[in-house]
View 1: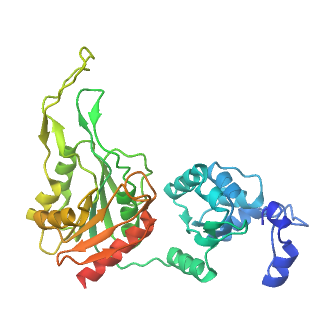
View 2: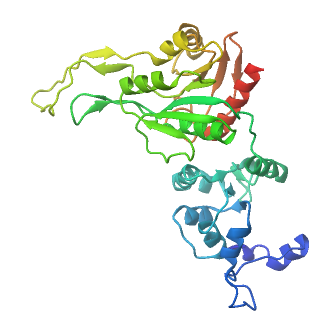
View 3: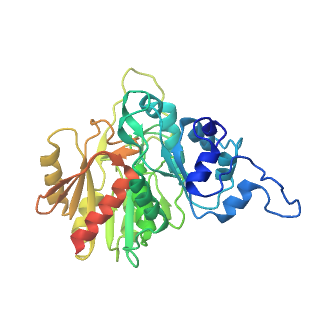
Length: 365
């Protein structure tokens, strides 16, 4: 327990109800100075299979994000050798505050598991997102972390992620708003479920994923060349990258000076990588494309599915709050060859990655 939490419920109450020792202090009473692991946070960090913080307050989340170690709990997390799962629980305005959301985003990128709070009535009397999930739900999430599915063992997966850049001169380029988060979460999820994963990534600001073969590229042409090198003998190919549709026809080897009011650029279409894969992949390979549409979304996604010869298309609309670029969440529809549409609510991109994998595996069966 953190010192502040003892102001709400006493350690004695928890100890009596749980019939377990409750720790608050760094140093246990009657410390044996001859024991190497007499300090609680070190001893516990070596012992634990998983650290669950439930509830995780905005204050504790902020401290963990920036490496504070001013109590037993935050020190334990800093010394951890196991996964950490946090259950954010607080008033809706504190949860939705951009600072809290940024902290949670940083923790996700660093490999922490965030168990999303539920929506309902809060202690303040307000209603919104911030409630601690039901205990059964938390236990299920813990089980998924400690005992992940390995239903992709022996499978080879190729994923593309992030944007590409098409340079005007050595300084300027055209690109798009893709953060690469969806592709990276797909790579993380497929790896966790046992696959051999190759991730071809455009320029992103995301941490590498352990045991995933990451190939960094910048331009659409570079991404296409790497896809051609690695697409064969893949069981699943997921094209989640936002590849530039056009490149600059006449690249300038020197920085263009601002000598006039206008800069006219001539653009050439880039190689359609998804279309190329649809025409060249093995018949046993499942090909997944993404469609980001802002109008006539279903019709445009179905057209893309058919023309690109993909097996499924994952559709999202960046104009919907919580979906699209630069967010940790997304709202998607999956469309198959028979034009069946499966809709998913707003979920984290990590959760959706697992939903997509489940869908693919059901498709194969």
